[in-house]
Length: 149
Image (cartoon, rainbow, N blue to C red; front, side):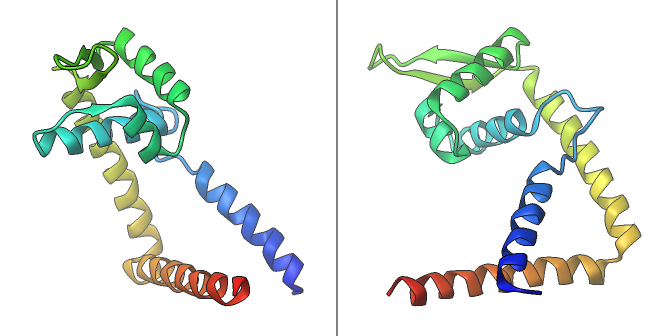
């Protein structure tokens, strides 16, 4: 295979992997919603609150996209915006009481799907997949340093 063919195949593989959805069909939350809630939950576990701009940074999406997701989740009583007592321009994004049950249900479902995949492929192949990815990412990092200098 030529270098350009490897590059095209890699791009397609990365796109396909990004499109993988553990929650397809039965999920209450999209991948983005799930990740957003996970970030809010991580801060909550640390005893902290989080704002939209920080969620946007962590998720790699725009603040506008975060606002749209938060608005949708607010309508479903999953998250809520709470004004900052110190700065009227800032609103913290917090979890509703109902959120944890939905999040935990989706985690159980994702874990069950992964358990099935691991059972079907075997632990050795799953570990190889992760190991090869880690090696690839490390080689890519080294290549960037060499090629750019």
